[in-house]
Image (cartoon, rainbow, N blue to C red; front, top):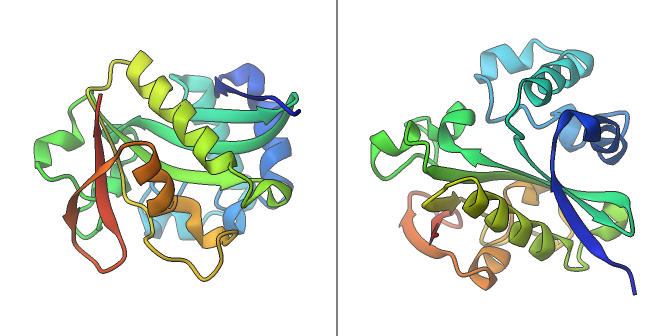
Length: 192
């Protein structure tokens, strides 16, 4: 039986992060920068520049998320941390914006904003495992609230478009819907 483990993404795990994301940088070359910089800035960067951006962020600390491993091989990633670390997640134009604008700067209000599961491991429970690791990481990091804004439906359970997670995994982890600004995209919350 394979064993799932998870660790905060610290600089010494950079090579594992690169291995998981592959040469193209995971979701269409994003390198998990989507919620970290305005679209106008992000769109002018190529994959190498995005990779360098996230590398600098990891080096600067604190860890911007958690890497999941199966028998020592990196298979999953979740971006999780204070809402202030993912400013585009808080934009007034997004479905993930906070209920209270002050939550965007409150260090105890955290967000689970992105997932990436290696292609061979999608649809096999890794998203549940990595979300569980995100909850533990948030609790240990002093979060009092953890929020996500998953997709209610996807064409396929293995869809790359599920980078925000699926409603099903958030419900299974005990998150409750607190707002719905767009059909199929509830804002979910877990009180820690």
